[in-house]
Image 1 (spheres, rainbow, N blue to C red):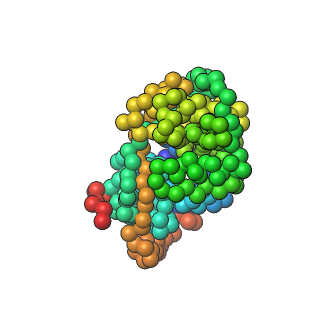
Image 2: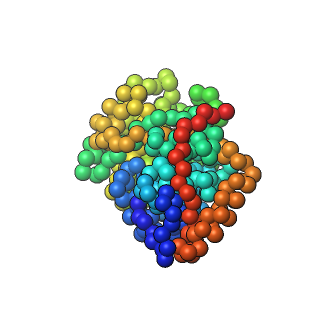
Image 3: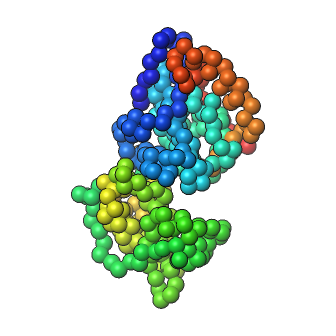
Length: 308
């Protein structure tokens, strides 16, 4: 993570925080582990970037990045050093409610200081490049927005409703397997960013009656193959590491295990945003000597907090 210098040094233990709008600078920050940063990297793509804000922090323990997006629903990503992430979230916690699409498990302390963290999922990030890809030959069907009713019906077979829109499907890459007229297995994408060379596969689901037949592997293979054809150099996905059949299936396609990540639902503790607003005012005054747009805040360790 980069350090941004100013005319005066901040006090020992302080963090500089600023909003970064330079795509190249942001891509450089996320270059160390592109698979881990895939969701945030994808939001540098035209059409997503315009509805996304990126905040960087730099201080004694290193640097960090927090992304708040409202391009595909409200989403948050945290990367880098715990205290740097904590410094950003103290000033810029984002929307009242959002989905945490990527965080390191060590960030939970900082996240719980700013949010009620609900339904956390401890997942495994996997990634694949074209040279490692071993596709499974099959005749899967490319799904378009006209099939959205079938996609929603399949996702809804195990409980809660599904509300994907026709436009959302058309903007993504979806493939499915049919049993007659019935859609029984599907795989799609969360982010497709060919200009950044990266994509995130997701929403892989098979009807319970058709599991164990290899359909999830085939639809995932079809989506992955199409993403490479679109120009993506790296494709990632997230899986429950306890789901050993799924992990093994993705490994057969060539996906390799990477970092452990956390996903969760977030609700801001300070719904009115009064405390962050006050902290921003103070941090802005302290950052004036550092340069335009710089905020300076004291670092604070973020111990785990029990959610309500």
